[in-house]
Amino acid sequence: MTAALIDRVRHRLAGADMEMTAAVVAHAVRSEAGGVLADSDVLEALQVLRQEFSGTGPLDPLLADPGTTDVLVTAPDQVWVDGTEGLRRTSITFPDEDAVRRLAQRLAVAAGRRLDDASPCVDGWLPGSGVRLHAVLPPIADSTCLSLRVLRPATHDLKVLQELGTFDAEIAEALTTIVRERKAFLVIGGTGSGKTSLLSALLGCVPETERIVCVEDAGELHPDHPQFVRLVARPPNVEGAGEITVRSLVREALRMRPDRIVVGEVRGAEVKELLSSLNTGHEGGAGTLHANSPAEVPARLEALGALAGLDQQALHSQVAAAVQLVLHMRRADDGARHLAEIGRFTRTGSGLEVRPIWTRAQGWYEKGALC
Image (cartoon, rainbow, N blue to C red; front, side, top):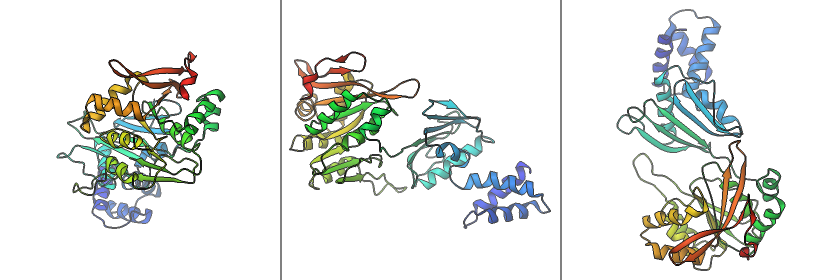
């Protein structure tokens, strides 16, 4: 099999309006070859070409691994995977830069997006897979960069997280108290630190008589709760129409008779609606937030509040009245995830800060602050 023959077959199939079955691909190979091919040559072509026209190509085995969280392509010969073993380079390679670009463009089309020289960056969701796609084409990047984030349903309960070493029995009891006492809280941490898993486990502790309405950018939360209602945001289509934002869904959630309102990830102007809802009788709400430490949470909230037109004083007043606690998740170098700190929002003369009441390293500073 030559590269020229595979390229001719590729162009032939690209213009075919039919399902890419093995028989279709084999027929195209034999037709373009113009002669008799050995079965081994046909099988080689089938493997190469079916990867290009279905799934995520040679990345499929990596995404199928239940421990994978991210698959990253930075060059044809540099494919990385992140997961339970940490970030590592794989042996998977692409034939050339064009092969990576074709895969990125095909996945962009599947996500309802456009990726070409006029629009060299794309962000979207691959349908029915729970995989978030991000791609960048040259010259924005040195070579086509492809990032696939696997969002797996968060189904662990507190008992399972305790067995995994996320926290001990004493902290498990304290977390249950937070939920039962209807304390509003934010779960913070970096990407892949376990924020969603902890939030899902805590929502499973909400009494069955209470109705939870959750707004998410992607359907990750799967708590064991009979009255869990999920609203999922929708990005705009190729024409730029049809977008449904997290902010608008938080407003819709208020009309659905919630006992508790949850935002899967607070990342924009929806912080205004969330704080308003927590200040109007919906106690025990929660959400996750990207932040490196509890001490940085006030500044992070100020930045998000500015997007919604909230000044610093108004934001501090809203947060101090509505949210009591911050739970900080951290991922260790070996991939283990654990609860590192519990902090409490406190008003000061200069504004708002988060003071630690428990840390994994030091233990309790102020256990009574949970009540």
